[in-house]
Length: 256
Image (cartoon, rainbow, N blue to C red; front, side, top):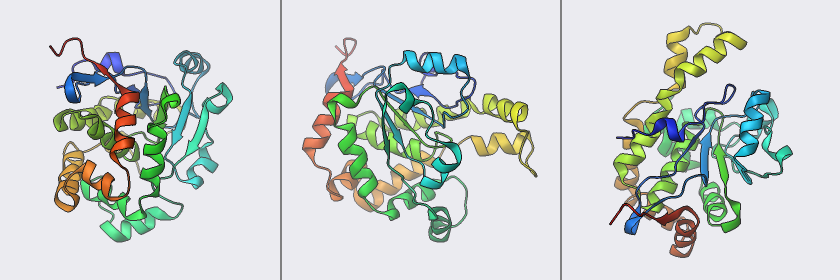
């Protein structure tokens, strides 16, 4: 369904799943603006050439979804030193992974696990959407460690608010699987695979199940009436939605 992956993917040598969500058809004959919202994994392993290319993107805001303990281990990455405003909005708190496993079972990546993120409370999503609604916050990079789970759920919420078709939201999510080979190559070349993990297992862990995002969206529909209904229930109103749409959408000249 998405045939322009090469246009939206930025193949940094030391950062993976870095891509633009621009160009998707949205509500009311509009489309998502290019070069306004990038999604990615950690950036602390970027090369000098990567850093030059990153600087050219002109990112003004970094939204870091990682736990504080991950940031202590990996660092914030290079963007604050490039002048980007830095915001840490942890989707899972320190120690939260064990709690998540207790709540939903250690089932690996799944829609059920993504729904478990919501059990940590609403404040992260409120903070995120207040930031997304800030007109001066773009271009924006939103990321976690791998750039696929917390980043994928957050991006799905944004695309839902923008009125992007659900099938496209799911297709955008699984684009992650197109970058797992490069990631496995990088790990093998730099640090080697962790003990007990071979290339096949690394590819599995770096990717995402094709049905996980669909199951997450189904769960939102069943429990709350859909993504927008959930966001409204936690206190994000139509004023914020309209500001987000103003920030990230433009008229689609090809829609007529």
